[in-house]
Length: 287
Image 1 (cartoon, helix red, strand yellow):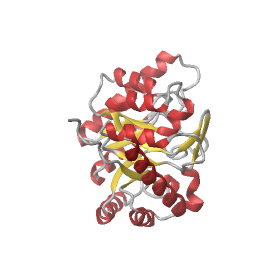
Image 2 (spheres, rainbow, N blue to C red):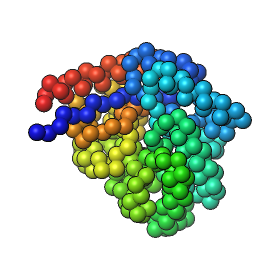
Image 3 (cartoon, rainbow, N blue to C red):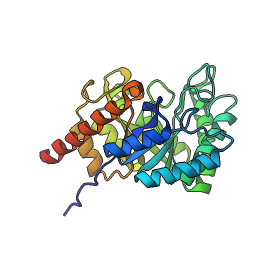
Image 4 (cartoon, helix red, strand yellow):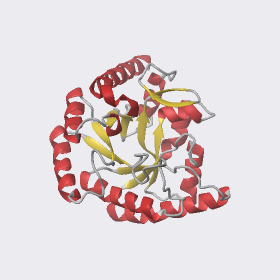
């Protein structure tokens, strides 16, 4: 007899609450019944370069415990390292040491908070390099960060991102091969991104990513348009996606990623969890 599907755990990204204090974000999400939070390290909520970082991390760990929230750590704040250009420097850039240092700090924070993963993405490829050289730089950078991941026992969860160098699950799997299938290298699959840019259907992307799947981000999106939308505003059919995640035994957070909802964050978060719960019920009823 096949084992019952794994219950999904829903989280919400702090980058959708940019006008709230982090303590208030956690309280709102807990009150709405979320299981966890996807914490983006940034200037607002938790700055990994803050002078009093140890104190802040200790306090945050207590708050997460008090609210019963799981956490995953994300490093996708677009202007965190460069105020002029998104996502620079990358692991492929001249000056990649800055990105490596950020990721090492994120791994230490994740370990202290009990996050099993740190999220990252490739960013854009540098100009003037061959594709082979870009892959080599990226793999070397990831391998360097994996040495720190081994020290803390925290996995890297690499996200294919539209219009970046690594933009599909297939390219992410290629990177996994370049780092020799390291056990702490995994995938963050964004459902909207897959629908936006992948040639294959979303369900095929879920199955393709499944062996390395660590985290899931979720939102609605339209084909070919990289805009994170509230559920129902795009054209993704969510009950089959949630069914696939449950049947594959995904144990990480499925985190809502609607950065543009900050001005109406509590209501967006409320509508999102209500939609996801209803979609799960529809999925269960269809089995």
